[in-house]
Length: 531
Image 1 (cartoon, rainbow, N blue to C red):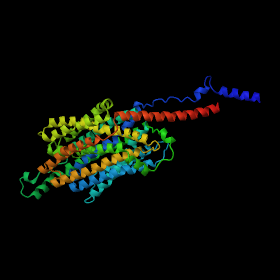
Image 2: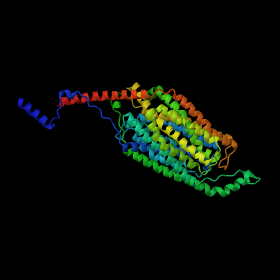
Image 3: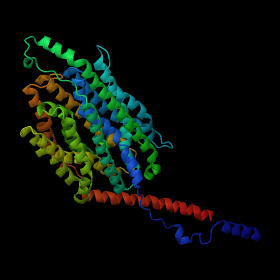
Image 4: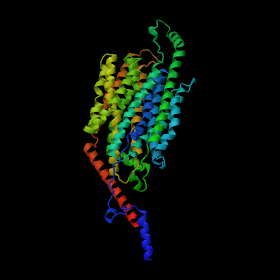
C-alpha cells in the first residue's frame, strides 16, 4: 500500500510543473482583480452601433414634417396626426421591447445582440417605404401611419437593446464613460450624415412652391392655381420624390453596415453579480422598483424638458429657415453647420464633465443655447448671422446629446447599490427614459403642426401669412427657452453629484472584490482537495 501511495503521489507531482504546487498560505489568498479595459477597436465598434438610430432619427426629425406637407401634399391636420401617432407609438414600444428583452434568455450571442441583428433588415425596408409616395387617390394617411409606426417599432428593437448594452460591455465605470463618449461622438456624426445625405440629395431637387394668386395678376384664383399646378407639378415634384427615395436608400445601406460592424466587433459580458443572484424578479416588480428610485425620476424629469426643447427646435427648424428667414435654398446647409459644430465639441464636453462634474456640465452646456435661440428671432434676417448662431447652438446640442447617456449608468449603479439582489433591469431604465421623451415629443410635434394649421399654413406656398411666421418663431425660440429653463430648475433636485458618484464607484468595486474573493476561496479549496 505504501508503494502504491508513493507512486500515486509521484504521478500527481509529475503532472504539475515545478513550483506550481500552492503553499497552504497561498490557497486562501484571493487574486487581485485586474482592471478591465476596453480596446479602442471595441469602443469604436460599439460607438458605430449608435449611428443608425441618429441618422434615421435626424432625417425624420428635420425633414418628415416638410416632406408630408410639401411633397406628399397632405393637409396639415393629417400631417399632425401622423407625427403625433408615430411618436406616441414609438414611445409605447420602448417599454414593450424592454419587457420582452427582460424575458429573453441568454444565448451564445448574448441577450441583446439577437434583437439588433434580426430587426435590422425589416427596419430598413419600412424606412424606405416611409419616403415613398404611393400612387393612390385615397389612403395616403394610412400608408404613412402604417410604415412610420412599423419603422419606429423596429428601430426600437434595435436601439433599446443597444442602449442597455452600455452596462454589458464593461463593469468599469470609467470604461463605460469612455465608451459613451465614443458613442456620442459617432451619434452626433450620425446626425451630420443624416443631415448631409438627406439635405444635400433632397436640396438638389426642391419641391416647387406656388405663388399666391394675388401676386399673379389673375382675378380668378382657382384658374391661377390650376395653371401653376399644370406647369410645375408633373416634372419637379416627381424629381423631388425620387430624391427622397434615393436618400432613403443611401441611409438604409449605412444602417445595415453599422449593424454588421456592431454585431461583429462587440461581445456582451454577462455581469458576474447576476450569475450569483437567485431567481430574477418579474418585470413589473422590477418596474415598480425602478420607478421608486428617486434619482432616476429626477434625472428623466430634467432631461424630459430639455430634450423637448431641442426636439421642438428640430421639428420646426426647416420650416423656420424656409419661410420665416427666407433661406429656402440654404436651410440644409444651416442644419449641417449645427451638426458639424456639435460633433467637433463632443470631446470638449467629455473633458469638461471629467474636470468639473456632470451636473455643472448640464447647467453650462444646455443653458448656453438660450442667448442664441433668442438672437435668431430678434435680429434681422441675415445669412451670416444665422450661420454664426447655428455654429454656437451646435455646441449646446453636443451637451444635450452626451449628458443623458453619460448620467444614466450612474443612476443604474446607484440603484444596484440600494438593491443588490435585484439585477437585470438595465433595459427598463433605458427604455422608459426614451418612452417619456418620445411621448412628450410626439405631443409637442402634433401640437406644433396643428398650430401651423390654425395659423393658416399654405401647403407648398412660396410665402406664408404673418401669423404662420409668428407661430414658427414661438416654436423655435420662446417655447424651447421656457422648456430649457424648467428642465434646469428640475436638475437642482438631482441627488448624484461627483462626491456621491465616487462613493458609489468605490462601494461597487468593494462588492466585486468581495465576490471575487469568495470565488477565489472556493476555487482554492477545490484545487487544494485535488492536489
